[in-house]
Length: 282
Image 1 (cartoon, rainbow, N blue to C red):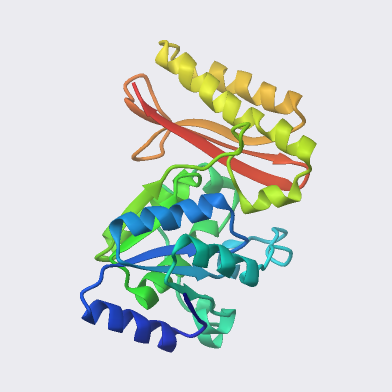
Image 2 (cartoon, rainbow, N blue to C red):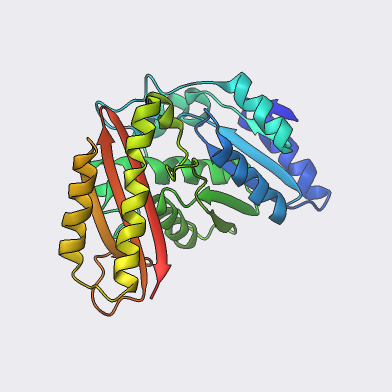
């Protein structure tokens, strides 16, 4: 496995692989990798011949007071995990390489509609930052396939629409969420949690499953289901930010006629913000 830090080096490798007729798969990450990230590499290997993984903590998707400065930077450990997983190339640029001349202030990439509720309601500018960095990375890597985890369902929806709107010739694959034994979604931010915190945080997935089961049994009183779920989160010491039942495609609130649903949740445990979701059809 090779590691490069500049776009010039990256494109030299990509050009050679494409000239050789190989299909390029891409897994963008912010590093501090866990088994969920490695599962994305495994997915990419099923669809492509040459796998690129980026490691870049993107400043434009962090808001004021969020954890950009303390977000773990673990390139050496991440590289070892990626090499073991069969990744071919790591792209680990610095901020000036991705945003030369502080150019993040020059361009805005917004995906309307699906970005507006859920996380978008409380994290102003977050999805604009995601849209900008993903557009830049797609341009730099020029992959045939890109894999994103479904744990951030809203982000995946934004990226799907971005890809269509900007005519990127890239297949977007959503990979299933990898979980701890108790159901807690794997996350780099889980490193902020104590073992007891992790046990308490498992209530999020438990309530997602409970509400899904209730809906499948015919309960369409969404408002009451949400209240009950949020009460369970609060009882375990979490601070619910939202617990929403939505249409999978539009991410608008679900109604009695919605058949493809997703339940999205965000909550804080102490200072750590956790997100999760579950999607299903009725």
